[in-house]
Each structure stands twice: as C-alpha cells, then as structure tokens.
Length: 306
Image (cartoon, rainbow, N blue to C red; front, side, top):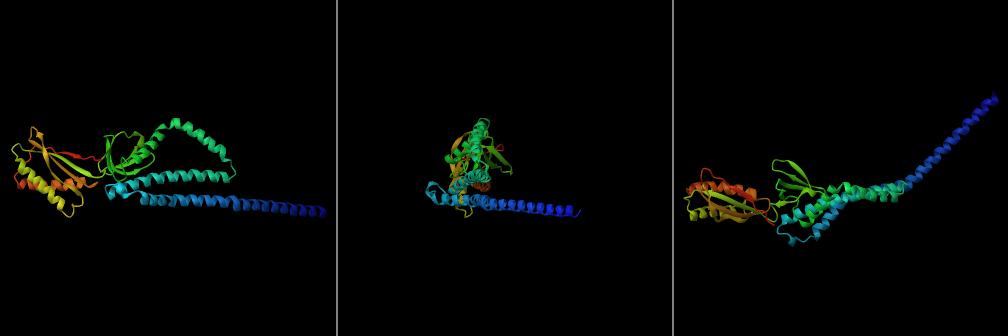
C-alpha cells in the first residue's frame, strides 16, 4: 500500500510538471507570435485607420491648393467641384485601404496570399460578366466627375424623369434630394441625359401672356423697372447677375399677347429671385392698369447653362 501511494504521488507530480511545461511552451509560443506578428497586425490596423481617417483630408487639401481658381467662374462653382472630387476620392480611398490591409493581415497570419490574389483575379473576371451593370455604374460615375457634368450642390434633372439637388456622387450612384425631401439613388450607368440647372449661373426665362390691348412700350417700362429695383435691393443684389427685363414679343395666343422676360442669377438662386420678381411685378402691373387675361398661364423654364 505504501509503495502504491508513493507511485501515485510521483505520477501526479510528473503529470503536473508535464502540464506546466506544456503551458509554458504555449505561452512562449503565443508571446513570440504576439510579439512578432501581433505587433505587425496592430501596426497594419493602426496605419489603415490613420489613412482612412486623415488620408481623405490630406488629399482634399492637395486638391484645394492645386486646382486653380481661375478655372471656375465663381467661388461656388469651385467649391462644388472640390466637394464632388472629395466624395469620390474618399470612397475609392476607403475601399483600397480595406483591401490592402486585409491582404497584409492574412499574410501575417501565415496564409499564402498569392493563390488568394490569383483567385481574386479569376473571380473578378467571372464576376465581371455577371456584374456589368456595376462596372458600368463605376465607369459612368468616373466620367461624370471628369466631364464635370454636375457637382454636389447642383440642381439637376436626370433622364427627363427626376430632379433635385445633388447630395452625393459615389462610385456607383448619384444621390438626389427632391424639394419635398425625398432622397433618390440613381445608378450612374442608367443616366443618359442630364440637365444641370445651376452650372455657372442660374437663369430666368418667363413667357407671360397679357391682354390683346396691352401697350407694349408701357409694359416693357414696368417690367424693366421692377427688374432694376430688384437688382438694386441689398438683399437680392448679390443674387442677380442680370436684372429680369422685357426681351421681346413672342407672338399671339387666343388669350392675348405673349412676351418673354429674361434674367440671370447666381447658381441655385433663380427660384428665389423669380418668386420675388413676381411678388413685385403683380402690384406694379395693377398700379399701371395692365391686366392679365383671366385664363393666364405662365410658362416657367429654368435656363440650363453650360
């Protein structure tokens, strides 16, 4: 019995010693791995975070300092262009950082990345045939930026179907916000026709019908006076580039004589200026005893300038 107990104690001590050795070995391995690969993975993640966090700001500063101001007619046009470039640059930067950091981390884990990269190429070719619309969206978005068709902040009409202010241009979609607040996401590849209403400047183009007995010289004086007063107003003087004015007689309709009124405003301000112009024109016409036909219809068009 004594010998049996001695053997049990000895075996327990041997097992405990072996277990301690294995634990020390594991901790040593883990410590070496963490000290080597773990530290490198931490550096990769830290560097990726810094690039994603500050890389866009750095590139934005470069664009802001290198893009010449004289290339754009107004400061607003330049800001819109820069915001659009910043949007697409940040999107591409974030995707690139994630892909590169992922490959580097996989390599640090001891996995050979060569087959992964090769497989990714093959998969990319295969997906290319099944994702042509995605590629089309991407390339179309790039050409929208290069051609400067529209920028963040512009008011546009796309495909004669939807219109609104451009909130963002991503590598895949154009985001519009309508006047009622509706947000629309339009794939760039589906855009075939774009009407930019606020490129460089906004315009006022109005066709107004008056009674057949209207005195044209008197009418022209009233319209021009209202437009000039509006252009001199401290509130609207910075918005008006060319005062709304009588342009010409367009022709006759069953209701009366149609005349055209033209004007030019700064970008995005044509609607506000037009509203104020009509607000002032109506009482001025009444004071001059110039009447509109009871079936009056006003054709409103925003000038699409290049």
